[in-house]
Length: 332
Image 1: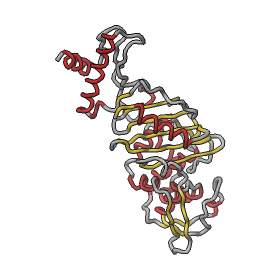
Image 2: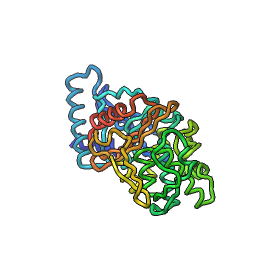
Image 3: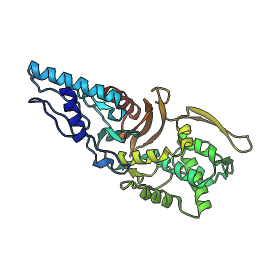
Image 4: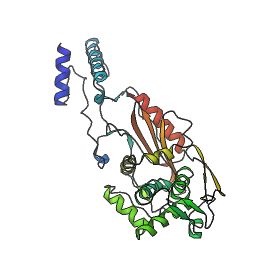
């Protein structure tokens, strides 16, 4: 009864509770409001732990308390996940990284979340969102020479080829085609009478992405910059378009021109789709300036975990390391 009483007091007031010297609770984790990731505390929801050299009596009290907390957590899903501080933080080589629990609005890991960096083809997530909001997927687009002569590698689109916006979105997101990005941007510009990059930056401002700027629809330009915190907010917004995430989790697909004469065989650039379980989807990015960038969303116990890394030499290995770590470092 005494343990239950003390636990109740600690939960209600969210304060530090000490039973003995060297025994403590961390302060409760701050809520994430969608636009203030940077204001959260990185070290959150710590499990109580004993002093470095506890007495037998101290250790027994800690074990009882810890077991009681986990018992309460099992009956209160909002209390989970809980960080297990017996597992050390991962060694992350990427310049910036974050893992965010979308359902619970909690940061589970972060490194340099405020660092502004080029984001390469992660830009295409914003491009796709504006296409969904301004074009019907059945609308037919004629591919211009400007699109083919766009940025970087070509995707096999042909001048004057007629293809639906929906199929172009598949080429954009699965193959990360810069040509498709330009073609879609042109179509939105023609329909709205607005410059597409201006629309991108207006949407960024509307979403409160204070450290995000766009320079082109593909991400090829080094002027496409953001932070992992802002990208988490963009990913959360993109969940409003489930079709987008159906595309992002597609490994391979064949799409055709309107007349059926041209086939585009698409292979997803995200190597983790078939390497990790429960992947909801992901988006890759790479330029020499940005280095490796990756968004990956996984389903953990019906909760979406958003992983974002920027500036990595080995984006897939780094993300896989983080995903494996977070599943071990928290009690679910």
